[in-house]
Structure formats: structure tokens, C-alpha cells
Image 1 (cartoon, one colour):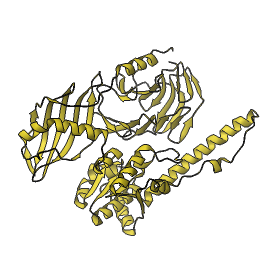
Image 2: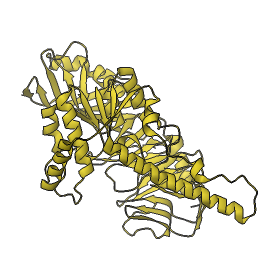
Image 3: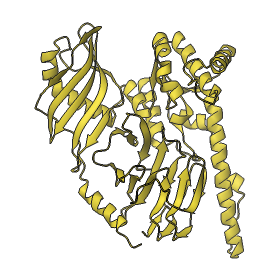
Image 4: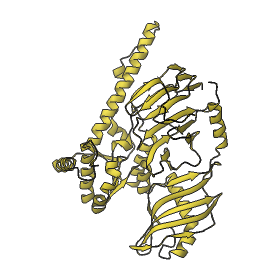
Length: 140
Length: 317
């Protein structure tokens, strides 16, 4: 897909931003969708800034809390700030700004990433640009 | 009430300029309105300032890089020192500007010794399997317990499992320390409405006649004392189909604790499973109620969002 996200151009990528096992996509209205690729079938968790169908969640004053099958809180999403806050997921924060993508304290802006399966990969231990899609993950 | 906050509740890894963030401001507004005091342990303040230093350094570097790009292209501009433009925020001053009472709480020698003992001997609330001794978290815990022993109402608001997990439950109960793991939970504890609270209240209201028929010990009108973070689920049409949580309600003589699972149709509370029931200290068998009561809950149209996402997924490769 071709997508502009947080001031960065992603061309011919399968997943523009992979936050752990979760693909982050933005539609043309600026709303984010978060899709978990960590099981056999992709599972939409956030759909256009809203909790997706059949996903366990709790509404918060500042967004949405996404819950796991074991009732653990996985992460929180603030649609006004377009920021993902990890709770039990061991990942840095991820903010999709107007002209940059913030991962923890690192900021990525005005990059052009083309032809890689994944544009920006965020893991617990680091970030990489233009990476392969991890084999264990489902395809979008 | 004294509201002790951990750094993972108040701020995140972003430079604060002149606003604290909407959720923090809501918490401060609730403290101001209710006459509560926000307690910031010195340990927390040091970490917040460290995070802000990091965020500030990142912003300064970004600005310097931008200057470098402009210089490279020989663009004329007014070059101001980044260190002067991007300043470190005075977090306590920003909090106090809300009108809420805010105090910095210094750890005592006893607090440090307590934390040291828990860390070294892997005592609760720390996780014995953790590789980190989590000394900072244990200092905050010690401060919170000390305040709870001294005052009547102390609430610790922290996401960290050291503070909000099961291993601290017994000690928190013994000292009267209240705990919440989100600003939502803190607002509910301060009797401020939240989206989850409003929806839970609506479900309980709809179920109340059925609940009272089954449990006549309950008060005439619903009196929700506490509920754990709830679990919601929607269908493909954006309609809420299920809400579940553990709840505490008032009875005439004491308290009613139970776990509820509400099954919802369109604007209807169809079924309510009530289990793990303890009323005024006595266990009660589980029961399923069929209130078939009208309930007004928000719903969101998801079709347009689904279409927008499909468009993104179908975009050229």
C-alpha cells in the first residue's frame, strides 16, 4: 500500500508502521486503525478511532483501553493525541503526529520508505526502518 | 482525600510546554472541585523531570537539525538558541496553576528503609521473579502506606503492577490505602463521572428492579460504591452487546459484592448474570436475571469507518 503517515511517505509497503505485532493505519479522514497481526488471522482492535467489533475494551476519559483475553489491559489509545500507550505490552509509546511519528523519545519525520514489507518497526528493544515482516505474523 | 500519583499516570514521554494534557487536567480539576490534594512524591517528580529532560534534549536536537537543513540551503532566518526556545517546564507550577492543592512529599528514612527491605527480600508488593528491584516503585509504595496509616482517605493512582497488582492487595486493605490504575479509576474514586461510570450506572439502573427483587437487601435506589475497570464489547453495527465487571453496591446493612455480565440487545438489557455474590458478608449462589429493561447506551456507526479502512487496505501496492 501507499500511505502518508505522520509526515512520512510509505510506498509499496505491506505495513507502514508495526508496533509490536500491531499494524497502524490511517484513513483519509485522519482516523487510526490498529490491527493485531500476532495470530493466524489479522484482528482489528481499533477501527477508525473506535473500538472494533468483538474486541474487549473499556472507554476512558481520554480514549480507549484495549483488553486481552485474560482481562489484562494491553494498551490505551487516545484518538485526540493519536497516541498509543502500552500498559502490559512491552513497547514504547507511539504517537502519529501531523508531521512526525514519535516513538518514545525518538521522532521520525519527512522520511520516504519504499518497497520494504514494513516501513517502521517498533519493538521493545529498538526501532528499525524498512524491515521484513516477521514470519510469525499474519498478512494484512 | 490525598491523591498520590505515579509518573506513569501523570505524564508520558513528550515535552510538556504550557499544558499538562487533558487527562491530567481533568484529575487536577477534580481535586480542585472536591478539595482534594494531589501528592507528588519527590521520587515521582525526579523521574518526571528526567523524562522531560530527555524529551527536551530530543526537541533541541530536532531544532538544531532543522537549522542545519536551512543553513545547507542558505535560507535566511532568525536563529535563536534552541536551549532558550525550548525550556524545561516547571511541572509543579503547572499543576498548581490549575487551582488544585499540590504537595511534594519527601520520602523519610523509614520509607527508604522499608523499600530497601522489600527490594532486598523480594517482599510484596514487588514481583519476586522480577529482575529489577524496582526500588523507586517501592519508595512510592512506602510513602503511600505511611500516608494511609496517618490519614483517612489516601488514593494511590498508578499503572505499575507493583502498585496496582494483587501482591499489594492485603497490605492496602489493612492500611486503608485505596488504589486505582488509571485516571478514569481515580475520577470515579473522586465521584467524578466517566464514560465507563455513566454506562455502568445506566446498566445498574435498568437492572435495579430485577436486582432488588432477587436481593431485597439492596438500597431502594442504586448506590454504586465501587466497580473494577469494566469490559465492554460491541457488535459489527457498533451496538454494545456485553458489559462485565466486578461491582460493589450498598445494602441497607452493609455491602453487596458481585461480578456482573450484562448481555445487551438494541437499547435493551436482555440478561444479567450475577455471580461471585457476597451480601453483607454472606455468599449467595449465582443467578441469571432477565430484566428485559430499556437501557440507553451510546452506539457508534462503524460502517463508514470500515469502508475507509478497506480503502486503505486496497490502496495500490
